[in-house]
Length: 229
Image 1 (cartoon, helix red, strand yellow):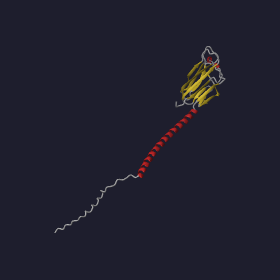
Image 2 (cartoon, rainbow, N blue to C red):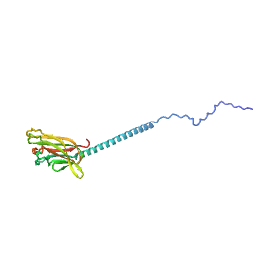
Image 3 (cartoon, rainbow, N blue to C red):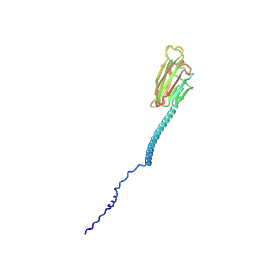
Image 4 (cartoon, one colour):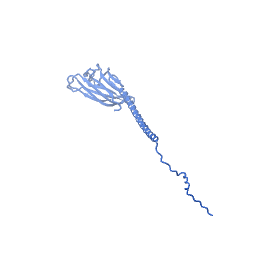
């Protein structure tokens, strides 16, 4: 016999399967958003600060290098070789007829020298090799209608030849007064020359008796140009 059972109640619900539960969408918390913004701003500020400090460091190094170079140049220029020699009143008598160089003698009491040596009373001796501006002025106070008074700057170089030393003279500059001057005339000259260590310079004139004894009007000098020019 078949027994059947009928009921009007609904069947029990099916239990949910694991792993198939539908998750609800998460909502961003205001605190999380705020912390994210702060973190990004912090990173940007840190990066900008690093760049700023790096640039300041480079600028500081460049300024320090410039200051060191300026101090070095100031120190070098303070001790740059120079000389300004004034005439000695009692120059020896010398004329063209004597057939010897008529060389001017300088007065050390009215002269200035820095890092330049002297060789005797009439010569300047170079201590540092370099380019120099060399100048001279000679004022002549006596008239001569036949010969033009001449003012020459001479460079003298030692030439070693075996065991003997000979001096080789070279005219660097020449200047003249006109033949027909009446009372006084000044012959000035100047130029830039490469001078070597131990070379000597002196001033030669036509006749020492024509030279004015005023030490302010007859002089001779030089100064070394900076190495960075």
